[in-house]
Image (tube, rainbow, N blue to C red; front, side, top):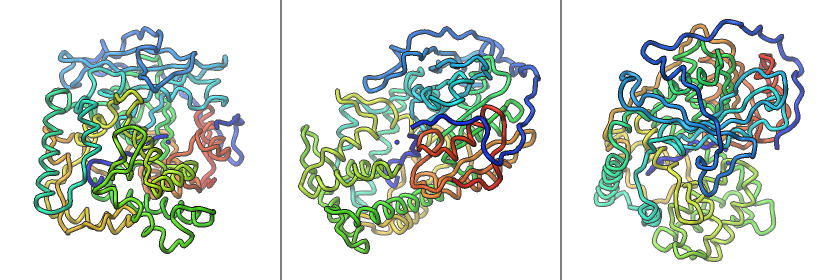
Length: 513
């Protein structure tokens, strides 16, 4: 799956499909235009030849790629304004097209930001996507197997931070939280380097994507992005509209939203998902929230609030902290398929045990069984802080905290004071490189946005708004999951998307699945 991750403080069946979807328009005629020339000063990057080989050194202890996968790294400038300066290496994975009628490459991104994209080469297996495209995944700069890698905390420090008791929003607690954020930012500078931290954002990644397109030999880009991957796709369309062949954006981020608005809409989305879970749970025997929907939030808080002071026992020595419990709960709300796991975790918690929720929090935080971490969280923080404007006004931070609690009462610990600490990005050592704005693009072919009515992380309206800005076809999926294309078993969605990607057939106007 492809989560839009929560920040520090306020802040998871593929089908054989037909080539045509009922009611679709005629296919768009493919252009035979040659590949665009490399931008000035970048020819050495655009014309490099990738050396594909084994993926063994590219994956961590909890990761695997299919036997048919190949991997490589390509070189890009750290700063595109200084192509003669320092360079970075972008890790790529590939599974070649299985059929003879190959179109080209389909570049995929799972979201995050900060998630490794190498395993996305499995997306679309058993469909015409696998027959006609080389499926290509990539780790964005600073992420996973790409080098250099964003690094902030050691595994021991990450465990210690997760185990810490939360601070109340008293003057002392606020000061402690803000000091912790400054310490974290300093560690990122020390272990990653300030210059690289300044160039890990969406602004640079979309330029890397165009280098990838050229290196793969594709005159135009075909792309499927989930969650934060929709931000990448949108920014690519804005910068390189003439280089787009096909673009599918699933679980959309609205580029006009500032961090405060986005976090509040996400809070509403997670409350909606929790309410849907609770409504289902109370109809079942032995629901850990009881059998009265009106008291479900109260019962949930009775289960998690004691963890503020006393962690729940777990099989290993760490115990389940308050923060990890909420992280584990949020992990299960990304998809209805995880609801039974959530019930198991909450039932265990009612018995004083926290193993299931701790395992979920480990999964979310990228912790392996051997105690090591991937760099998902550190990369997430670095990318988010360089992408978005900072909240530096304590009054705005306080208003955000108050409104977040109202929007998501199941997340409200009841300890709000009307004040709140400034979040991590207020202490970030490099300026942000993007601003919220409405997208206006000329020369962009028809694209597709997919939005789910009950999506907790990227709420439905964001997809509606993005489709309008891009002039894209909108596919509405009625469900309670974060993203759907080729991962939730919806033939209605998948048929339309595969027909678009392979034949450039636009989905039926107003398609609802």
